[in-house]
Length: 608
Image 1 (cartoon, one colour):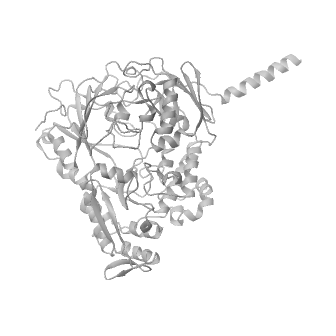
Image 2 (image 1 turned 30 degrees about the horizontal axis):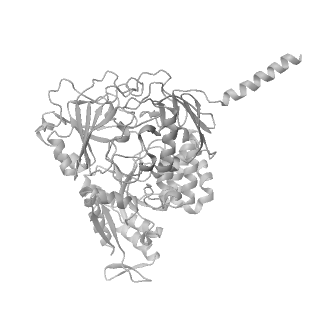
Image 3 (image 1 turned 90 degrees about the vertical axis):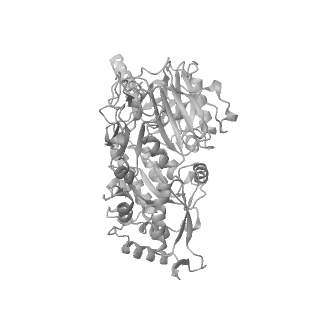
């Protein structure tokens, strides 16, 4: 009888590790299982039969002085990360956060996500024909960890061991912090050519076109003015499921403009193929020109099912004038959304009352559930009661510009913070110093809003100076936190994760180049970010994100502005798109040009 029992025990022992062991998969989801089964042919939002060819031109406001988007220094040209460099896995835009094979044909990670192992695609190669190897992957990790942007350094230092486990296999072992997003973070790491990069020179800005493995290479650069990408006819990954129906244009050009007005005129004349619109006045009144009336230009309002992101006026809490949260709360109450929306934006915007507005991740209007209360219990003093119980709301004015309630509440807060009105000026009682600060602007559209807000502040004796600077200076001052207040937008996905550390984490509040522009330093925020990263199912994840939202809102680090309920897009009619719009909104890389069009718009010659 001993032999059968021993055999049974051995069988059970063999079965136990299998249930927790990593198995190769074609995709990896942050929570749950990937939507697409192994062997899928293309994403549902892509047209695998889309014709290839043609040239499109897009517009960007600003300038650039670098072709390296992976370092802090310089202002990099747009889209290099999207078109030239590739990562191990590619993101699906119709799922919250799911990745599928790209440079890596498969991915393995155990249930506890303590490591991730990638198997490289045997055909993967850089555009110069050099095969992509495990050595390139290991090199890229070390390079970006030691010389990359602060967010890369922060993410990749969580890797404690990197090893080649096979001819085409590489494994990353993590630090035991329980960050369940790390396998996906590594899947999104750009893979760079070891044979072409000198680590000692990597952090210097350069206008030398980089080599990657992506579908396009840089064809032409006019520094600060334009950059053109040429589709690689020998692109190794063109038939992968994640790429089928994508990257349909032969040439993509980005032209840089000084201001939004010039960009719009270029679009109207046919020099630009497509335009994302965010100006309600222009959307309502500006699209009345011959090409739109006769159908050569189309206006579309497309659905989007993701969080709106946080568009805000940002307090630099590193500055003494904004160190007191009562002062910040007062200035929030002085922002008259109803007046601004009616007079500047034709009533088209919705007020953003959450860092995750327009989604189920928002805490606004919802009392904290039991999981949230448990997470927030050690940090009860960091959450306002009205935000905890879901009753919080910004003051609502009558839209006439009076905002009496907001002014009354703001003055009470300012008085409690040690200020008083004296001869029409708000002054610090202890020192007699007037309350004045500078708001940095990068565009005329920003300036218009800021001047309106400054006028409201003047009514309570606050002097806000608006200073518009060029894009390069704005970028430098923003990256070094050399401002009192700026306007900024943080985009948000349906799966917030490690990027939240780089936006709100205490550790990066003093690190140049982070996105923690307000200078948030909060134990509660840090703890909620950690809870988001450790959440092992959807319920815990949603509760952790809402708890983070409550702590951020309670800190009054920004003046939340507004968002649009849909995407506004205008484009020339020869630019076509798939019938399905993915969860994250339209994806230009799935569009194509009508091959029957004699002279597509944006091909370089204007169309009246």
